[in-house]
Length: 271
Image 1: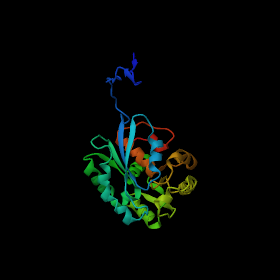
Image 2 (image 1 turned 90 degrees about the vertical axis):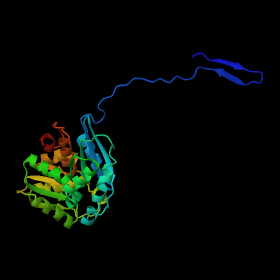
Image 3 (image 1 turned 30 degrees about the vertical axis):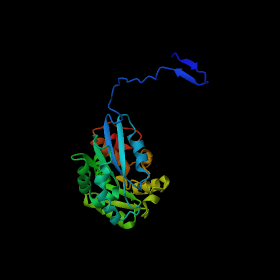
């Protein structure tokens, strides 16, 4: 670019330069990050785990997860869990407003048990009419059906009354629960720091019961997903968890059916 520089008698410098160019360019569009599936996820305000585990479980081209945080109390008791219902619809509205989602998942196991999956679905559909939805209790029911398991070892961090309520929920749904193993921890922020080695030991102990044909680790705060393949090899029995089953169920509801290795038997199983 040519620039003429002149100096006037007072010593001031001026330039005669062409203005900078602004280019308006053509562009193409594609399906974006969610070319195959756009999954909405409602994450509890106190949850430290689910997003990390879902990145591992759902990391594949064309599948995107978009989440919003839902207020909750860190104490995991029925009274605080029930109060979350009022925030489900407004939190769902925060996920990609006016853009399409394939499914919305509610990321709380004990909360979906206390509120009820039907009520959770109604609240989500206030914001997203007609959309496919899932909760951990629905997802694990679908997962256990896909795996052909009816007798489950239940591992959970909860206090006794919440753990026993979870066991009763599955018994009423037609399962046998020969083993309930709990850590008796009411604080969700502490549950997220329970060491994977402690969880693995609980899974192996539950799986050792002769009547158990699968193990379910309840609570989205517990870190299990990356160990599922190893735990299945050690125990010889299918293992799933709240995050594990919820991610798998969300994929299948969104129409993604590819078998995925390294994530346990469930991720090689159709809905």
